[in-house]
Length: 72
Ligand SMILES: [Zn+2]
Ligand SMILES: [Zn+2]
Image (cartoon, rainbow, N blue to C red; front, side):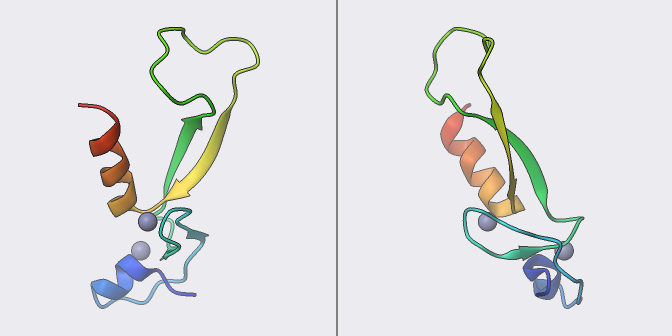
């Protein structure tokens, strides 16, 4: 699979990851590894013992979309 974002720019780069949101292939440059808390929702507690984060790979577009919705 090739990186979709590179393909849009006319380049061919092998994908090393896949966006979990939209499923596009991503190269190292375009994959964003994000640690997402398992607890969502805005509890005022800091992460406690036992709270884990899941590393997930997303593309730039989905990353931007998630962060628009979430905060700000
Ligand atoms: Zn790329
Ligand atoms: Zn995506």
